[in-house]
Length: 316
Image (cartoon, rainbow, N blue to C red; front, side, top):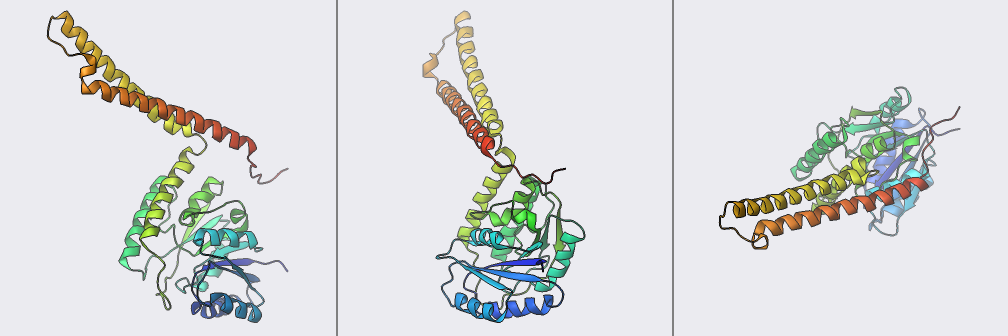
């Protein structure tokens, strides 16, 4: 029998939560759906892997993947996506803050309403303010930049058509921007569902200052990749030309002023004695370098596109 739902759950030091979470999933889905649960242990230091082995012996739906060290949530999701066999893929966190009771409706939105991706929206959250404020900032900026109208890009509870997860690759902190990556890959029917958010029962949050910084850097990366990844000349070339022209017109102004003063028999300064000349020279050099960077980027991009394997949706 084919599997209807694959649930991918990345985890790090969640030994207390795992039995409760698996029982919750079983109570929600048993006798209703065929499903598998793929736990990805991201280098836990506690007894999480031992608990997963016990769960695998008790529940035939459970599969486990264990990293040698902690690589991050994006790596865990990416590896989990490779192992799924279900028609619909659901991701959720292992800390019991995501409710498995949302899964049936998420599955229905993907299968019956033909969404490529459905993202959860934790409208009411039980996280500390140090986590909610940066999250709101990133969500607003990402929505504006990407044109995807979502309130919570980073919600761990999402549902995908299996074709989506087999067509994308995520790394770094890019799990925050999976909807943006999916849209760039051609999956643009993206929906949202308000989901319940539970207070953490065990352990502590893994959110820290480094995740805020990395998230911001990845936001800049995703902006550049989605807008200029295939045409870097449009960015670097435009800025380079504007910089070159600014320096050129400053130079014309300096020379014109000198010639005017000579014609009017007024005192004048040598061009090389004016700080503005060196500023104009610097701006011209920067403009040329940016243009060349765009040109080289364009050559690399075209070479990569020539070797790319384009995703063919169907043939007649």
